[in-house]
Image 1 (cartoon, rainbow, N blue to C red):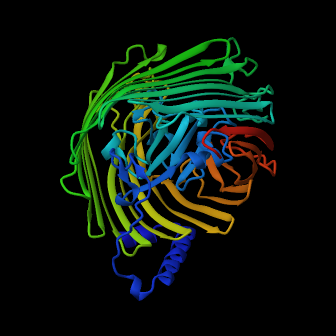
Image 2 (spheres, one colour):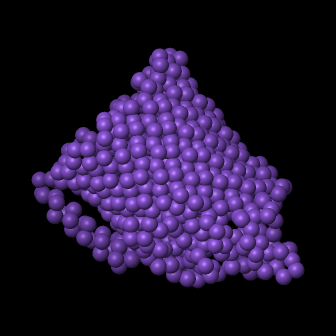
Image 3 (cartoon, helix red, strand yellow):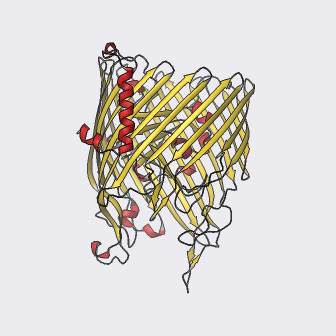
Length: 634
């Protein structure tokens, strides 16, 4: 099976993988091919197993973006930050503040589960999370699970899982603040405080961002929706976490995140008597996201840990020009989980989860509540350098019935520097409320999309050098889409319907590398992606066949200077091929005192004009100047 997988990769991906394999062989001498357990287990992560586990004990393909990387990045948004990680491409209808999602390992934006502190977020009517509503200022770190995640997190984790983790207080009070001004009349400011006092811990962040932007659409778009006005945005976000440790090892906490996005966009109304497109109204989105949760975690002994969470998420969108349509998703989530560590290096996890989803919209007035009950089992273990991970999940959904998913992973540490892994898993994407209930479109018998995937990877780390390669293949069947032929729809559908249409093959290779040489730090990511509709042989829309990121940073004394180059290949969409493009971001930071730093960045330094989606345009060259304060030192 591995040979078949490798030989079916695109030629350029095969050449890249072959080169990486020869490089690996050249770096390993005969004396290296004996086991020596890796001693550096890396950071503790949650997303890979639902329990805090050192990264080095897990088998999956997991990336962590910590607070230092977030603050040092030139990224203008969470989606721009994520696209610089391996295996992730970006879908955005314009510049910052416009509707955005990430394509993880070639899946659609609806194929990635997004969590905030363990709570699922996003629209149940569209079936995806619009990341434009979330501010980078709220985030302490991001964990990314690349590959099937339904065996842990249920529906929609076909490409993987992105978990956003907000700040939690500890120790003495810490404060931080940041303010900056940028081109296109842009500004951003945020402030935070965190700490603990006795048994109490607390953290809070407040941020505000705005930009005048440019017109979201280019002149001459295919649907006649261009309006020359500027389509800017304003985003206000607040988050708070508080906890009380009422006994050693036992804590109850409350979390809340509230984000409000106000953005303009281009569209058209079609009014009688001519029904010609009228793009003159000032189209706006009023988008609110709120996440609140009450949680408990207790350590009863070195062997037993338990946790529970009650959470609510509201995703509300009002959108329109002269009239507004409103769509609101409500989620109530209840989770209970236990972990048992019978001996060191082995952990069993069991969880029960209940999720209730409702959608409020005029077009979906008759849609019932959707309830999902799930049971999750997981195991992680280490055997003399061999690592094993197994997950199983059973979902029962009131709308589409029972689904079982599972994942099995094996890894081995060949030497202190080299490790190998192999993972196979299944996942599914649930039909959305629109797919099931939208008038003259939804069909109640739609089946979930199913996927089966396999991946192989190798990691190498020695001193200040690191490299990795991952090969993956994902077969998706019963893809949900629009069926335009009325004869293939139930009686009474005049313009087509939602249907299970076809199969897709998503396969590719991701190579990463990093190197520190004195004051210089270099890092690179290269992605090859072959995402095709198996029925037609055509590449799926908005998927680039390749994407590369190259970064270089230099630090000396109070100075830090950096550059990030992004190269994106051409992409098909709407019967056209969007040209590939390259952007260069530059930045400089100067520490004026131990707690104060002046920052400058020049985004899209080449002033490259490109289409993030067909007929949409991104910002040109943009200069930012800012000041940052941190009571703990910078």
